[in-house]
Amino acid sequence: MTGRGRDAATYERRGATESDRGFLAEVDRHQPELVREERYTETWQRGPLTLILPPVREWYPPELKAATQLGRQSAMDGHCTACGAYSRATDGEWYMKHEDTCMATDDALDMLINEATLKMFPADDPDGPPPGLLD
Ligand SMILES: [Zn+2]
Image (cartoon, rainbow, N blue to C red; front, side, top):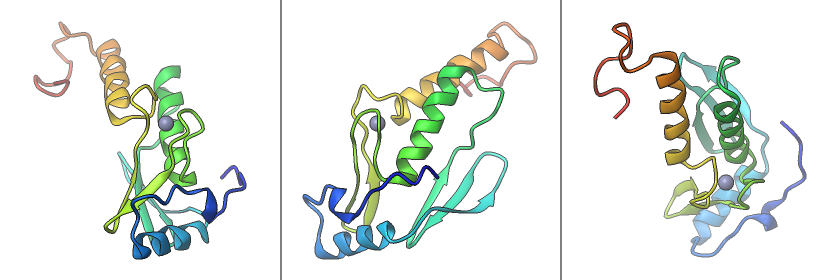
C-alpha cells in the first residue's frame, strides 16, 4: 500500500444512509490485506469490505498494466487518483464509479484486455481463443 493519508471525511457521503456511512468509516479504519490469490483474481479484505481484484501480470502491455494497477489501487484506497472518484456505499452496496473517461472503468479495462489478447492471438490464429471469448 502507498499509505496515502485519507480519512473518513474524504469519502463522498451524499446519498449514503447512516449504515452506509458506518460501513465506509469501518472500511477506513483498516488497511487492505491480501487474503487469497487465485489464478485470475486476488481477494483483499479491508475491514468489512471484501475486494475481488484482477492481478497485474508482468507480461501485460504497458497500458493494460497501468489501467489494472490504477483500478486495483483506487479500489483499495477508495479514491481514484486519475479521475477523482471516491468509493461509495448505497443501501449496503460498496462501489467505485469512475468517470467515463477514466482508464480504470470496466469498459476501458475490457477494451485493453481484448486488445492485448488479440495481439497475442491474432484472429486468424488457429490456436487463438475460442469464438465468443472476445465479444
Ligand atoms: Zn478513475
